[in-house]
Image (cartoon, rainbow, N blue to C red):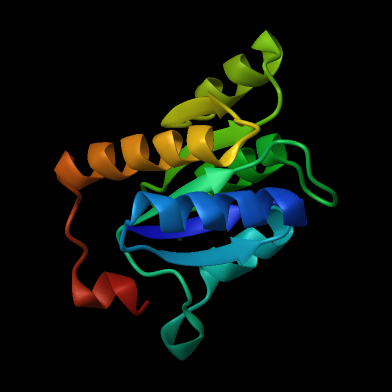
Length: 145
């Protein structure tokens, strides 16, 4: 599983990395500290492309410069980044945040667990789910445009 982790909090990134190791999944992870950096990574072409298809975006909501809701809006408006699978992983359990995320076609919404064991369960669940899902095949000319 290729993961773009959009997370500004270094402690949460360490928790995620530890949980990923504990889960024992084979994943490539690229981190963006906010929505602006994530869009730059996703829009990169050729040798600059860091995130390979198929990928999953794990997105925090509360970030500087461009928050998760703003990122989702930009992502869904972009014709260059089709069909991105986004799971919001955030501390917010606010119903408005949940509604906004699903309104922008998030694939899932998870309230961020506080411990490694709980985060490992989230990683396992996501990995198992995406592992059984059929993914669209992109032609080579689509990947290099």
